[in-house]
Image (cartoon, rainbow, N blue to C red; front, side, top):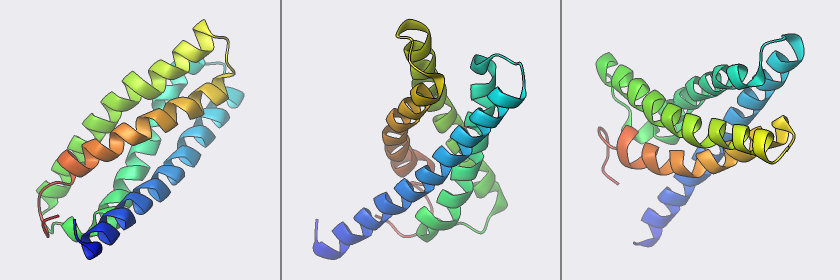
Length: 142
């Protein structure tokens, strides 16, 4: 890997991390508000917060992180949204939500801390799925 390619890739990782940070705020914030303002079980509220973060992250990743791979075709954007939602949703349900339930129910961890741990673990997986599948096509090659 040559020097400019390494810089471009590290910038993409930094952008993805920044977007992920905004997703953490969205997920944790909505999760906190919903659990404090409703009487609905936290296990049912978590997927709502996760989906809000997924949509937030897709928009920022599409517009900024992988801006060099934009497409003008609406059907490609919709296809990416569906791919991102599918991959992030599956990752979030298996990793984020699974860790939340495991740490809270089995290990007695605070649900807000457990949620943040689940988000962190899911973030790493989401980067690779996004890079190699969701935003793989269209635009300049890597």
